[in-house]
Image (cartoon, rainbow, N blue to C red; front, side, top):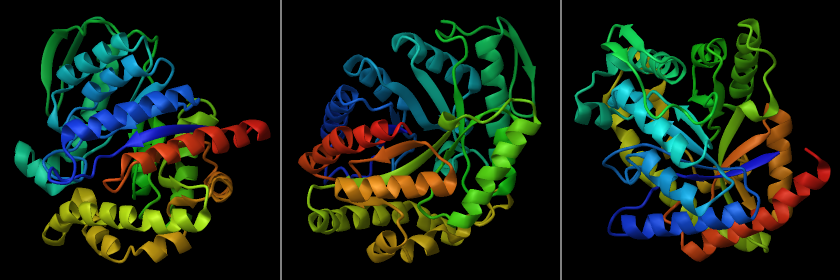
Amino acid sequence: MQFGLSFFPDSHPEDKSGEQYFREALDLTEVADQLGYHHVRIVEHYEHAYGGYSSNPSIFLAAASQRAKNLRLVTGCVLPAFTHPVKLAHELSMLDAISGGRLEVGFARAFLPHEFNTFGVPMSESNTRYRESLGVIRRLWSEDKVTHNGEIYNFENVSVVPRPTQKKIPTWVAAIQTAESFEWAGENGHNLMVVPYLADYDKLRENIQLYKKAYEKAGHGTVQKDQIQMALHTYIHEDEQQAIADAKGYMEHYVNVFLESATAWDATSSEQYKGYDKIAEGLRAMTYEKVLNEGRAAIGSPETVIKRFKELSEFFDVHQFSLQLNFGNMKYEDALRSVRLLGEKVIPAFKALNV
């Protein structure tokens, strides 16, 4: 089993400055590296408290690479809809060089209406930009001179320098709801990122199986244990009841910040985002009691958290977790406790089980 540290800023400037947030995040990253975590991961979003502090994952991961000498560095995710693929390919290849070949790149389509409005990108072009960009970036990393004539982008004889440090940079795609997205990820040989927070668990398990079948049918081989990554909010305290009490405010803060951005879907519809108009509705119904009762986060003592990871791993056949351990505008000392307990109690427990 592999465990990583995932950052998804959710602070308003009046609550926690960007300087404080990233100082704490880098300190936690260094501790996680010392405790045998597998990776550090961070998102890309804009403007709002929901992820908005992290407009460029490469900047944070470059800094993290100098504080943590062993962690893999994961973008979770970059949004190609808002950046020219040639620029993005250059930046990511540069990050791979700076980190000594530890980069893994997660891509996502973007889904927040305000971001499309800000960048003047029609939501109707979302899927085209996304898929065209991924194909182009892969070519730019593997071919010396690339000419591309697509629906969105056109260029001739472009080379990316520096060349990627790794022979092949691992690529991940985030899939949320539709079976078609999971199948496309498999057909094109990408690793898979999933977020079960608002998902129907049975449907998500079915979609993961569709991904595996598509991956193998397309001739990419057998999906390995470390090719599916699940994101999860996690809070650990030595005392079970204290963990449950502490995490309540943090979880509710995260949900409210998410809702601030997601309410735009109340007045937005798109053929490319079927079902997204239900996101705000789902968040309004996501009480803390529901989170606990349905196990939509790993909250409790180390023993409880170990049990939850076992359950999720067995149900979804997932063996890599990317954990939000400082969510909800969390106090640094509470996040540090969780990071330490996971590294000192949870990770060794799974190593002992050899899973």
